[in-house]
Image (cartoon, rainbow, N blue to C red; front, side, top):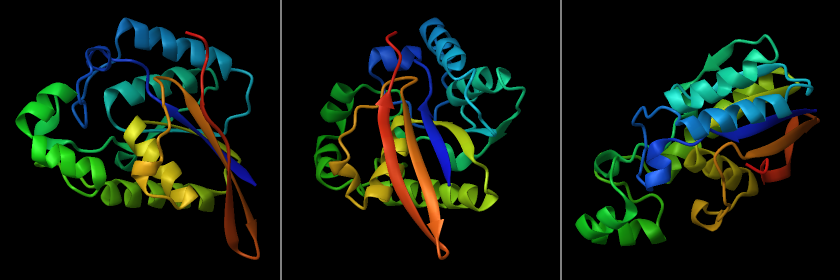
Length: 201
């Protein structure tokens, strides 16, 4: 039996402006740092065996705050990165719709339509599920993984065996979701305990 606590990173200025961040390395804002500290305090008395993070600064810095309360180091894994959004990174949804309307509309109905220079939903889901199955093999009991809304949504959709577009979960900055797993006769079964639990910021 084990569990992974999937945490979305704290807020950035681009979050507050509604810009696609993708794999741009945007730091936490003052609000995001406060969110990360409050979440780290919340987890302080939990038993946590390891902390993992995307290599992007907003995720790593959130993870470091949590790890510091447990005297743990942060394990960085690029597979926890957000979708690469290519030419859409740095633009708002309205700007994308104005400049890339056809691709945007097609992607709304098919997550595997790539933004120019970006990733498909299947590519993101494959890498993050690969990461999860490797974590399961470590037999760590409780792992925190700080990642991004799109990547967490792709992971949860994969476990639920539904299309990513149907995984219409709200995932707030520093909200956390818990996935538990068990092994029976070598087979792994999953149970999603909570999605987007959050403190009252």
